[in-house]
Image (cartoon, rainbow, N blue to C red):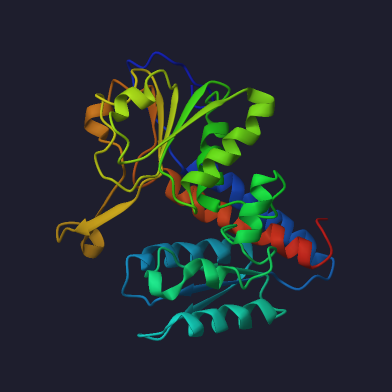
Amino acid sequence: MPGSWVGGGHLTRSLEGRPVAEALIAAARAAVEAGVARGRPRPGLASVHRGAQTPFAVYLRQQSRAAERVGIAFRTVPLREGAAAPELKATVRALDADPAVHAVLVEHPLPAALDFLGAVGALRPEKDVDGVGAENLGRLVARHPIHAPAVARAALAIADHYRIPLGRRVAVVGRSETVGLPLALLLLDRSRERDATVTVAHSRTPDLGAALAGCEVVFSCAGAPGLLTRTVVPEGAAVIDIGLSTRPDPQRPGGIRISGDADAASLDGWASALTPVPGGVGPVTVARLMANAVAGWERLTGGPE
């Protein structure tokens, strides 16, 4: 059944992201239309990036299309080639001061010299749309963030949509401050209602199979193609693959091949459910980003309708 989950996993169900994304987009669009009808300014989202000739370009186009559907004024802010950390921080500070901008996204990962976290730290938490600044992450630890990272919330939205039980043994494979750790915190927060027991592992965990043993849901954001096979994933587990890696492939549209952390061929018929890559968490992340932008806009312009 599309809206339910059955363990045991002889048939691996594909957890498609499109219906989840469409529901988020529709709700965000309705909120914008209601707010604008009452005289609020249209929400504005600015995306700061290193230019169109990077793998981020695909994500940038997805953002632009989604913002148009929701009714968000979308602005791209490319950094000049060779820009250093002070210039990035000044750009972010200018956007934070701009009353027409209600949400700011800074491309990541960035080279360490550009100090991504320092730049995002220049934003007030309402405009830190991806929830990765120190204040929002600190609020997440305290269980009351203004924004939580869109990728982590997208993964949970898929689990909720397909009714995958999270009050069980759950694993997060990945420990980045922008995805893995926030996701683990969100899952632990849910434990008050669902009693999840959360294991955090990563690509360098010795004997990953032993670490994941007994876990009924596995979220993976390690960025390691082929990491999850039936030798490490417990039989019947549901796998939500957040990993995203690219490599050149002239036979593919755009000249790149996109891969997740899961070896889909190995897990077929072994896992109970699996998100496709692409087509799983990716479109939901973009939609969740729009929902975050609208929530920030509501807070900055007087609260939700």
